[in-house]
Image (cartoon, rainbow, N blue to C red; front, top):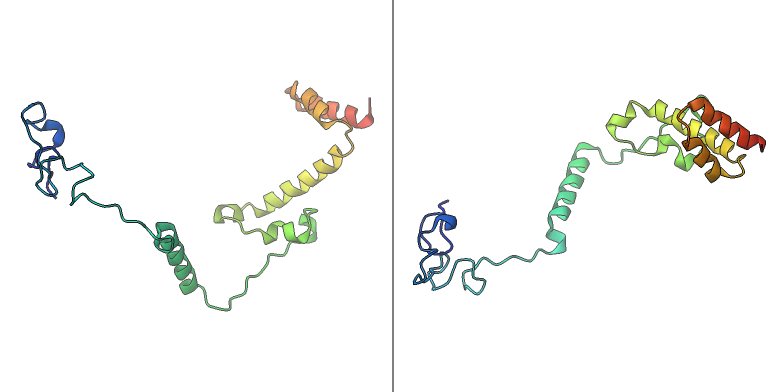
Length: 162
């Protein structure tokens, strides 16, 4: 593909066009040869932007391809097996929200047990915080110290109501 000047239609970059500073210069269109610049939208040969129909948009084509590739790699009538969690990894969540029923990216599959432990821990923290009368005030006090033991002490004091 050769470079065409949008000012004079010759084979050089428009930024270096020798005619650009000439007040007597009449532009020449690189699209049609008419007396205007190639960037003139009124040019009969100015490239028109094609309107894309929603069914042929890039995203929809990509979605179709993805569906075709997953259909081609997965046998039809393949049932999805839900993961079962043992009793010692109970998260305390309803079965619909259990970690085993949530599809995770591959990099998280390795840490599935760690995530289950984290959810169990958060459930216990939720039970503890339910005993604190003013959670917002307690958090404000806890944020004033860096020492984790002081944070636990503040939390226990609030739970005891002192």
